Image 1 (tube, protein in one colour):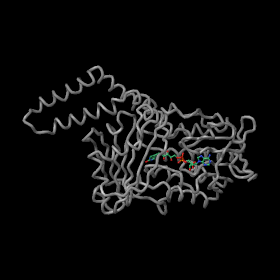
Image 2: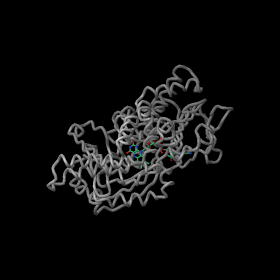
Image 3: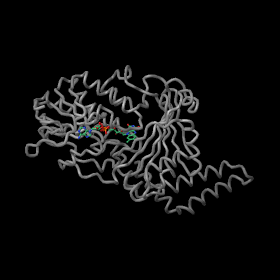
Image 4: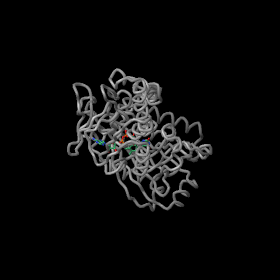
Length: 432
Ligand SMILES: Cc1cc2nc3c(=O)[nH]c(=O)nc-3n(C[C@H](O)[C@H](O)[C@H](O)COP(=O)(O)OP(=O)(O)OC[C@H]3O[C@@H](n4cnc5c(N)ncnc54)[C@H](O)[C@@H]3O)c2cc1C
């Protein structure tokens, strides 16, 4: 292990695999270290895979990647206690290859990706935890692992170690995690016969459906719920900000139980056999919570850098893209005969700034703060919208003009005209 590598990648999730694969493919000498028994053994995700990010790394991934269903329909539900109002988007264009989004099972997917990394020439060692970064002054020169004599050296260390990123915190590259910047998500996988999944969601073949949910299911906490179709199972989960769970003294498990009992969700899960339960943090602090992501001899990629777009539930694609861009930075510097100094690694930040990763996170930079400070977006508005739909759809002899008046007054009663205008402005600021 005293050997020197061009790069060490810590972690074999999507960001680490993308970085290690890109480097190895370019002929760099790469060591990848993963604490899990195998890549994916410790990883949790919904999970939707966004093809574009992976296609830019492995163009022919569809040939053998373990994919569940390609997504042809997205439902967005705003839930009240007993009802929901929502939108559906379904397109046959999404049903024509090459497909754009897939559901996956992360344990299988990460294992497959890690296999590709090894085939590209990287050395992956699992069941090995990196405990420290080796420093020469301010410069990272390698890592210490929990293996005997486990110090190993490299020109650059890429931290792809996920949301907790103990290493970056220990080295002082990143502050302690703020509970207001991370969501705690819990999810279950419910197994059902393939025909049941298909008839329940009106799909056939490998096509699938996604349901994203907001509203009363999170009890005023900032968060969302989700339900995804896999081949022979459904993934159902909910996540809220960790600080909100603490404040409300509410258990995530209890929240998921109540969500599953909602009259809109219960029938979809009926008869399923729950086989997997997992909980994991998601970095949702957004653009304003991104730490320093490069320095002398090191870069941070993926969840460790807070690269998650919570509005669109995109994380793995930002992880893979940041991993690829970090690797491309190293490759470019090597080609130019330049060292991996902080000054030169600034190129990584520049590449990220030019990509959708930073552009999207910047677009939604006000969102976490605005929604966190205005819980009525998760309670009052779902209630009002559902009531409005109910009032309009119920045929009871009341004329439609009167119904409109009733709906308008329910909004102003609950939020006042000034409150409504203020909320409209906040919404605009959150999504501007
Ligand atoms: C419930 C849930 C649902 C989600 N749904 C989606 C979704 O549908 N679509 C989407 O795109 N994203 C989703 N995400 C987000 C997505 O999972 C993450 O953004 C993505 O996994 C980040 O990848 P990563 O490689 O940066 O980190 P991780 O996937 O967390 O990988 C980090 C790896 O590093 C290893 N590691 C950590 N510390 C060390 C150490 N010291 N030494 C050695 N190894 C170490 C870990 O074992 C792990 O394998 C979801 C997340 C959750 C929790």
